[in-house]
Length: 145
Image 1 (cartoon, rainbow, N blue to C red):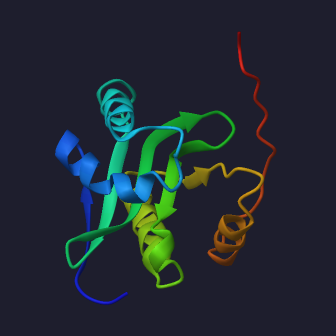
Image 2 (cartoon, helix red, strand yellow):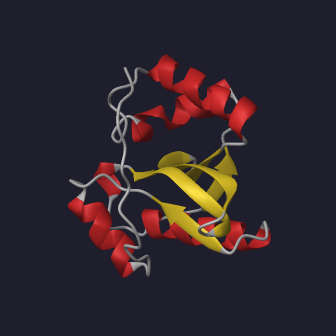
């Protein structure tokens, strides 16, 4: 990391658009406006939060997350998306965002931080394991017609 690091909520369309160049690396199935509409809907209806890590005002990492409570794991922060700009990976931005999410989870009274990661994302898995996350379950799903 180079300069002044700041993590801010992205709760409006302009802030989400500014983060789009980073987010599209993880979510290429969206176009920019579709992503903005989806996240704004999740913020309004699901308690979702979007946070962006900036270095010298440039978005470098993005997280979409929410506080949830489940019988299996109690109150926790669930991270929907966590992505670092591919052009600046291995510079500590992802770690800084994950560390911030852990602190935020504790501040909000959560017992855990949870996330799912696609089976083909080997580099992400190595990062999560290095950062102390453990593979605790299989996630199953089915597309409904």
